[in-house]
Amino acid sequence: INPQTPDTLYAGSLDGIFKSSDGGENWSAVNNGLTALQISSLVIDPQTPTTLYAGTWSDGVFKSSDGGENWSAVNNGLIALGINSLAINPQTPATLYAGTWGGVSKSLDGGENWHSLNVGLPNPDITTIDIDPQTPSTLYAGTAYNGVFKSINAGESWSAINSGLTNLEIQILAIDPQTPTTLYAGTWGGGIFKSSDGGENWSAVNNGLTVLEIYSLAIDPLTPATLYAGTWDGGIFKSSDGGENWSAVNTGLTNLEIDSLAINPQTPATLYAGTWGGGIFKS
Image 1 (cartoon, rainbow, N blue to C red):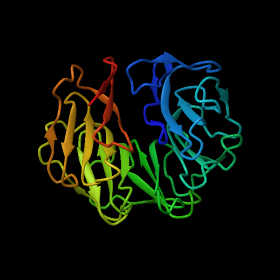
Image 2 (cartoon, rainbow, N blue to C red; image 1 turned 90 degrees about the vertical axis):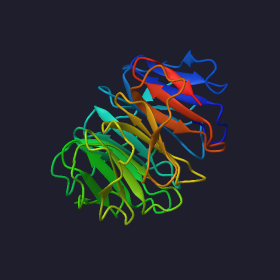
Image 3 (spheres, rainbow, N blue to C red; image 1 turned 180 degrees about the vertical axis):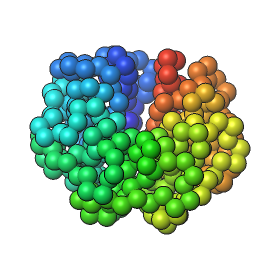
Image 4 (cartoon, one colour; image 1 turned 60 degrees about the vertical axis):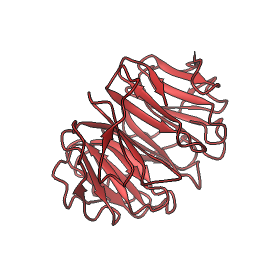
């Protein structure tokens, strides 16, 4: 979602990138310049939202400076071309991180050049990467088999923070925007874990969840105790108490495999859900 003009949306799919300028009512493909259409990640420059980055499964990272109309590859120095996650520094958006099957790469110049940052990472299996919005030198990386890692020096070194995690297959991480020491980890088969101390300790928060394969998480930016979880085949669950209790919110959903969730930052009651094979739903 464009943070300045939230009716402008972008959706990454197995058929490329689509754009809507009317809150999702109508979409058009914006794939000019893309050499790979399997999109794994999209991030928007929060200060200049016409600048976007797309991660692909096989051809690295692409950049657009005109709202998605044209794209060009920005892969110089990338550790691997299979991109699982992208993160952008909200304070200095020219700084980007890419989570790949080969580890973490960082760019300081808007993707033009990258260098690897794997000190302390035992295996290059990064599934998701997130930045503390208030202290961007603090990063969290989720891995496929080794839990969560944290860096407090902008990615130069990493350390495992898995105390209390009983499942180390991390699918997604989400950081409370108002209290960034509070974060959530969605796992494959273990449900959701919560930390209130910057990842030092974790505890499961699954009460009410009937599906423990978590694909996506989204936090209400104005009321962070409200959050949503997208699951493999159980649709969307909502918590209004910081993850302590969950209930399904699936009325109107005809596809229950939720791959992506996005909240309108200006009117957080508006939520978008991207599904596997069923398109996009809006509430």
